[in-house]
Image 1 (tube, rainbow, N blue to C red):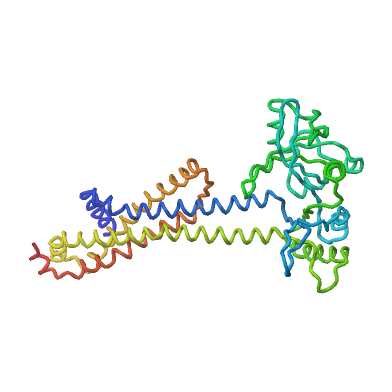
Image 2 (image 1 turned 45 degrees about the vertical axis):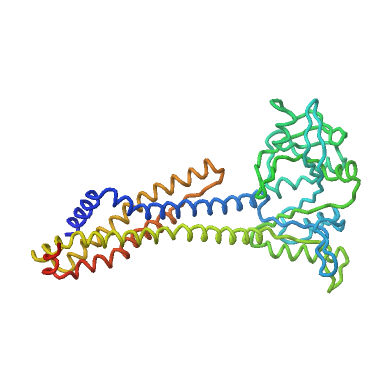
Length: 404
């Protein structure tokens, strides 16, 4: 009986092709929109997560100049309270610290032969590679000996190497940073853009002592990147850094810190919550069209019941029971939902790929939104088909046979 009901439903849809397509259109658009919008939201989430991960795993950032509760707030990183010795103390004395890399930075004009490029010059230590998840694609990185001797050596980011030395090997070549000579000893592997759209490869690494004394004329550091040994140790390391720096800087109880410790795992959690809310919002807005599609199914099924009133009367006169008529029209409504859902999945996946290709937005297609939206489409067909099916099943056979 079920197989016969499916055959009757398909025959009814084929007999009214245009009407069937228009009825399914709401379901197709709804399912497709849900899949496409959720894939966009999940793509944004993954991009933010990968961008934060690219900064370094289990990372904490220490900057000088904490904001004050009184008077004018001072921007974090704008004061001179952190020293190179603070980074060494953090690395050696705080339990759970895997590595700590102090840094100073500034933008300078760089010249190589007849090429020039304005880029960020970062003075740091050998620990920078481990802490910030960078890798050397060619040559070598700065060493402790380079720091001690204040050597004029430089490691180029991929973008800088491409613009200063197009088509040639930069290792061993000389460059001038703010008119000071440096020798290129290595090239970093490419990392791409950060979450803020900044090019992480547009950078030159030099020894921090060289940057402080030979270029900037300063004795402080602008930030300290700290890598915890594991994600579970992040809060303990943050507390340990705070206690150590308060002790080293002579800050009494009740006084404000003169530094800021940012935990990037907290930033990650906040970003994930925000992107999850965006994904839910996009999916909810798209799901409204599924409800509209369900109303379309109810409308067309009521029309179908009216058109086939005499057929229903004949079936009942021949012995069809309430359950038989109910199943016939319910199956027809569900078939509309199933076919519309399948077509909607194809539209949604195609739309997600189109958004990624044409809009430059990364999309992530996962099984869950596909399964949920398809199940919702079938459920919509069943729910909105129930009333017309029940109306058909309750028709009086004598009145139905009289219907013109």
